[in-house]
Image 1 (cartoon, rainbow, N blue to C red):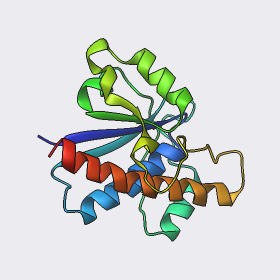
Image 2: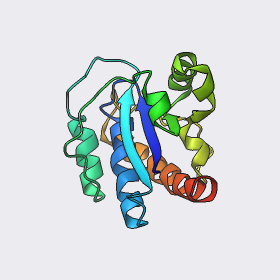
Image 3: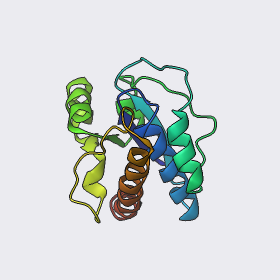
Image 4: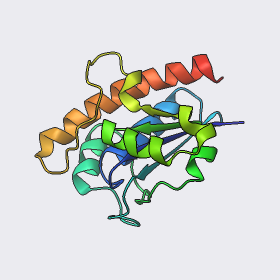
Length: 158
């Protein structure tokens, strides 16, 4: 059975779809596509059905990540049963997700950057209202967290 990972931000158009794209590529490069499934969602439904923000896709493409075919969706209660890890981009998302999680799934909810090793940051800042450099910083953090996440899944689940 595959290990399911769900990345969550606010509107599912910047941070979480970037994490989905980066992690999906790293999973493929590690030869783990049959062992790990990946998705993303938002805590809010402002952008449901929309593709990721063009600044996110542009920054991701510049580093070789593909976000084609993604569209924003809101976290559903069934996601807590479907996914083994529900990873929040910041503490606000963590709070929202832990409040929403059914009791037997609470331990699946974590801050994504707990898996990062090259940064002391605990949150992936929202690049939406800033300049292009914010999207590069987001990618740096997500790449770091994704590498650590693959190691943790290999150690703890596979």
